[in-house]
Image 1 (cartoon, rainbow, N blue to C red):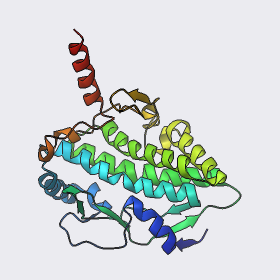
Image 2 (cartoon, rainbow, N blue to C red; image 1 turned 30 degrees about the vertical axis):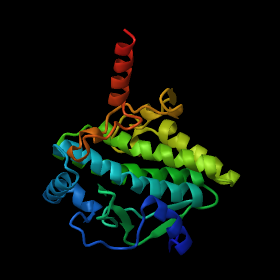
Image 3 (cartoon, rainbow, N blue to C red; image 1 turned 30 degrees about the horizontal axis):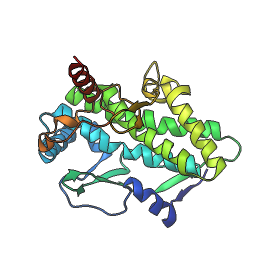
Image 4 (cartoon, rainbow, N blue to C red; image 1 turned 90 degrees about the vertical axis):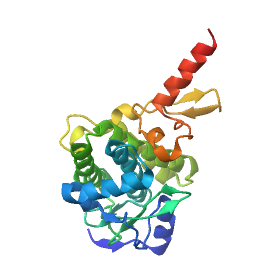
Length: 266
């Protein structure tokens, strides 16, 4: 299987997920490999904590993983839509400092922008190895490092990734007109969240994402179907934005709203 480079058209399509070719000179520009070593992870967390005005590094690491979630979105989109397995080795992935409306929203730069094309005769085997490259070889190592350094729950970090993967696949299934791509999207989604065993994600006994795929419920206040999170991402704790509301899917916010509703009915 030969490695090729993404086309300009594909790069433009992936740019909606914050993929960039531009380098940044900002202080919060770093390589993914920097996050698995304590000596380089600590100063990154310290700078990020100050930038987002987080109360502690536990909250900081959770926000970091929420921004990191666009890497698997980029990777899975290319895999599902084009059958292309991107090179996302830790040394190849860079987060370029960027802010929007006062929020830290880094762009993602892939050093090589190369991919391996899926063979026409065995997509299932190719897909499994592609998922292992993403989850076991890359994301698990980042999650393990953040958990060790900050004690943040691994399940919080896994769910921070899952939320964006739900969004990507559900959007693709709703908007894609090619029936074959929709078929791949449905199959890949099902595999990731229910069929894959723990070994795809690292040295784990069970799939860490399977518990997050719950039925959506309707919120009375905006008549919208949402999937309530199992864990809280701590965004509401950011000191910079104390007036902000809880995330729409936040389990803490939902419990508070329910409590307020019950008290109002007494």
